[in-house]
Length: 380
Image (cartoon, rainbow, N blue to C red; front, side):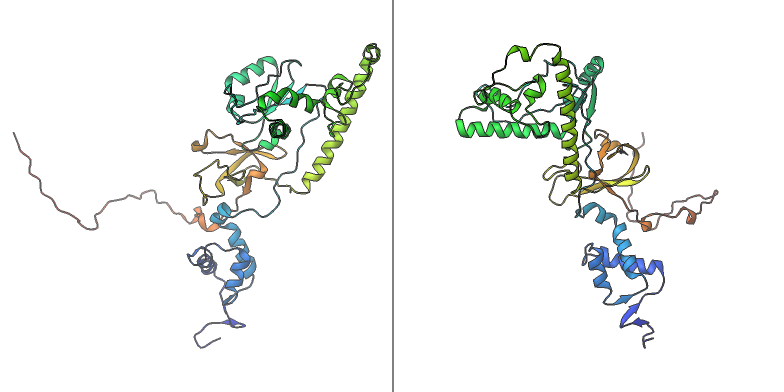
C-alpha cells in the first residue's frame, strides 16, 4: 500500500477485479488515437510496464480477438483455409468437362480478341464445371442444359480455383501462343491449330500418355514421331477390351496424380470448419488487385460483415445469409473467403437489464427557444 492509497505489485499498479474498469483500460490502450489497434503482444508489453492483475495477458488476448475493427482490417498471416477437393474422376471419355472463356488477347486484323471453340464432336456431356460468368448463369444456358440432361456445377463466389483445370489449360495455351509470336512472328490466331495439335500430342503426366492416345487408343503420327501402324491393330473384337483396359489405366493414373497433388497442396493449407448459425466476415479482395465489395482503395477493409452462416453445402463451402444490398452476389463462399467473427460482449446490450413499462408515454418538451418569428396573413 502506497501513500496515495494505491496497491502495487513490483512497482506496477494493481487493477482491482472490476470488469468495467478493466475493459475501459483495455479500450483506451487499444482503440485510442495514440495506439491504433495494436496486437495482443504489443499491447501486453505496453500495459505491463504500469499495470498488473491476475490473468492480464489472457484478458488482453481475448479483448484484441473480440475487436470488430481488427477482424475487418488485419491481414491473415497463416496458411489459406480449406483442404484441396479434387474433382471426381469421369467414368468415360467426355462425360464430365470443364469450360471457360479465353478473352483479352491482342486484337487481330479481323478484330478478334478471344478463342472461339464449340464442343460439338463428342456428344452431350453428363456434367459441366464452370465459373459463375453471367453467360453460364443465364436463364437461357441453364434451361438449355436442363433440357439436354446436363448437370451444371458452378464454382463458389469469387473462387476460380474450383475450375482449376480450365484455368491451367488456358495458361498453357497462352504460353504456347506467346512463344509462337516471339519465335515465329505473325498473328497469334494463325497458330491456334498448331497449338491445339501440340497440346493434344504432348505427354501428360497425370494420365501417363498424350490426350490424343487416350482418346483414340493409339499414338498420333507426326513428323517428329512416325509410327507404322496397320489397320489390323485397330480392328477386331479385341479393340473393346483394349479400350476398356486403357480407360481403367487412365483412371488409376488420374487417381494417383490427384492424390499426389492433394498431398502437396494440403501441406500449404489448413482445415477450417464452421457451424450453422456462426457469424463470419467475408474477404473483400480474394486476389491481389481485385475488389468485390465496398469501395476500391488502398485502405479499404479487408473483410466485410459479419454475416450468418445458413448451412454447409460441401466439404469447404458455406451458404451465407446476405442482406438485400448484396442480393446480386452469390451466397455460397469457399471457406478461404471467410473469417470467423468473434463477438464483442461490450457491443451487445443485455436484454435482462432492459425494463419496459406498459404505461410508459413520451411527451416532447422544448429545451429552449432558438428563434422567434412573426407572420401576418392577409384575410379576404
